[in-house]
Each structure stands twice: as C-alpha cells, then as structure tokens.
Image (tube, rainbow, N blue to C red; front, top):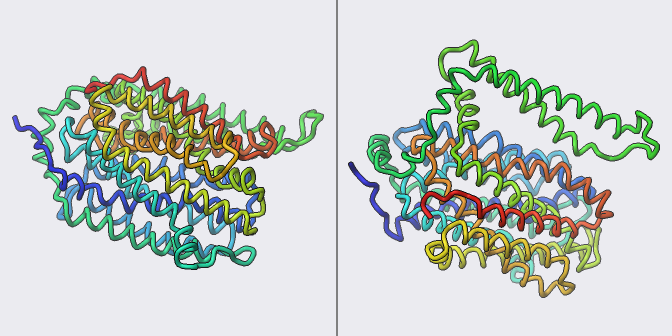
Length: 515
C-alpha cells in the first residue's frame, strides 16, 4: 500500500496562491456591492434581497462543479481546468461590474461574478484533500486561510488606499460609481487571473491511478458512510416522491398565505405588510420539493445513473461528521452574511451620522469599513499561518474552532457597543480570528470524513450549508430590520453575533475523527 507523501512548505504555498486571487474578487464583492446597490438607488431594506443572487448561485454551481471535477481528467489535470476557467470569468465580471448603469444590471453582474468565483473556489477546497494526507490538511487549509486573509485585506482596503495614497476620487455624481471603486475592480481582476495562473502552472496533480492507490490507505476511506447511497438508488423513489410532494405543497400554501398578508387581503386590519422578501423562503421550499419529485421520477423511469440523482442521493447519504458540521455552518454563515450586508450602512449611520449613499460622510464611512474589513483579514492571515495548526494540535480542531467563533460573535456585537469608529479595530480582532478558523478548520475536519473519490462533490454539497443560511438571511433580515429593529441596520450585527455564539456551542458536539 502506498501512503500519500507529505508536501513541503513551498509546495503547499504554490497550490494555495490561487486562493489569494479568488479572495480578492470575493472581498471586493463583499465590501463594495452594497455600496454600489445604494448608489444606484436601492433602499436599505432592499439590500439583502438584491444579494440573494450570490448565495443562490453557489447553491447550484458548487455541487455541479464538484461532481464534474471528481470525474474529470485530461491534459491539464483534474481540478486545474476549473480554476483557470473560473478565474477568467471572474476577471471579466470584475471589469464590468462597476460600470453597471442600472440597479438590475448590478444585480445581474453580482450573479455572474459569484458564479465565476464559485467555479474557481470549489475545486480549490477539494484540491487540498486530493494533494495532502490527512495529517497535513489542517496546515493546507490554514495556508488557504492565510491567502484568504491577505487577499481580503488588499481588496477591502483598496478604495481607501487609492483615495488616500494616490488621490483617486472617492465621490461621484448621483447614480455613478466613484473612481476609487472602479479602479479597485480593475486591479482586482488582474490579481485574480495572475494568482490562479500561478497555481495552475506551479502545481502538478496526482493521476487518477495514484489517487486510487493513496485512497486505500487514507482514513477517509474508512470513514465512508455505509452503502446508504446505493440503497437509496435502489429503493428511494417512493421517498423522494412523497417527501418532495409534501414540501412542494407546503411551499405553495405558504406562498399563498404570504401573498394574502402582503396584499392586505384576508381581514388583516393593519393593512399590507411588506413581507415580499419572505417569498424566497416559501418558493424555495416548493422548488426543493420539485427537485425531489424530479429525482424520484428519474429514479423510477431510468435504470442508468445520472449526475442529478447522484447529487441528490449523496446529499442524503452525508457522513455523520458532515451533518454535524452543517448545523455549525448554518449559524456561522448567517452571522457572516449579516456582517457583509449591514456593516457599511450600519457603521455609516451610527458612527458617521450618514444614510445618504452619495454623501461624502457616507463614503468616508464606507471607506472606513473597507479598512476595518482589511484589518480583520490581516488578523485572519496572521492567525491562520502562525497559530491555527498549533492551537488545533494542543486543544483539538473543534476546540480551536469553538473558541474562535466565540471571539467572532463577541466582535460582531461589539461593533454596536463601541461608540468611537477609530476603536472598531478591537472588534476586528475577534472577527479576524473567527474568519481564519471558519475558512480552514471545518474543511480540515470534513476532508477526513469523506470518501476520496467524492471529495469534490461533497465539498460542493457542503456549500449548501453556507448558502442556505445566506438565502435565509437575505429573506428575513430585511423584515427583521424593518419591523423589529426599526430600520437600525447596525442591530443586525448583534443578531449575527448571537448566531455565531450559537455556532460555537454546537461545534463542541462535532465528531472529529482525527482530532
């Protein structure tokens, strides 16, 4: 039997550099898209629903790309063709996004940009599982986390740097994007292409035969779930049709009730409530039910396997560790999404006394948020490179992750409590530590519990539990801010902090097979 060899520091470095470019694109998106939306006329409570394209795209794209990359091998390798194709598309989307003339165009470009980032990002997660033995995966994902932090810092601070150091204009006429943002997107596109190309050219993938030999001795082969997926393939069309039908009708009924409340019909004395955002929840339930019905129909009619039913089968056959991590991810990413969409308007309103997205004070606040986001990414990069592997070795991976999430939750809540914007860097310490762990430790735990031949697919399915909380947040946070928080955007960060603390507590129940 042949064990997968350990890789040296610079080999792990080279295979991770591409994530630096991916995160620059992701960071520019997170720090500036809400600002672009508001500049083009979006109201504060419309922002979450406009963001819904981003997580919805990941929900669809990542498992498909994972399944495809698991079954791809050619002249350029298994994962690398997807890195490169996604990087080219991301670069083009970054060049076009700041020139969106209308709000609907900006929303469409967010969809394109996020699809492109997901095409690149998902194979990078599986790449660590392919290339590194289990004993090195914490280090491998921590290296990715380092580059995520470094890329996040550069992308978040770029408009501020261009304005303060190079005198690029930070203001623009109503309905136009400032030059500092436009130029940041141009530079970001170039970084995405260059960094991903570095990894593509400097790293050689193992062949399918080599991966098969390694898999015989890998612990994740032992951790593969019992042949539940094959059982589902033989006997589960009844389940899919029945469960899917129940979800479909539940979605239809809930959507009808919601339409009655939103329109003011049905005897609601307070008149119409603006609950239209919640249609994404009720319609989503119905659509998922429809997918299960389709899977059941295909299973009944077709004897041959197909990618669609394979993905559905494997989703229901997740290993126990993955199911436990899924719940942790749900609360974690709900918190992160609230931070990304509400920090800019929240800090601008509370600390800079500005709600007009075209005003100099608002843009000063937005730029300061970019600096703060850059700060937490610097903390994340340092913490990932120098501390995560050591702390995980001492107290275990799930202990390290739980402690990091607690600090992150406290950091989010403290943004509301700290009155001086210059002191918000204190909040970023906790958020940065949490971010370093979020983008590394769960994947290190997960990769040890997955069958090697389905690493890409399961990494893509795992993205469901990043996307679903973001879809839920996009649907309900606008309603929460409007009706329960009286339009006070910064209180959404307190909600997010509480959610992250819940995630920390749940982490302690995860079964980490290697530590």
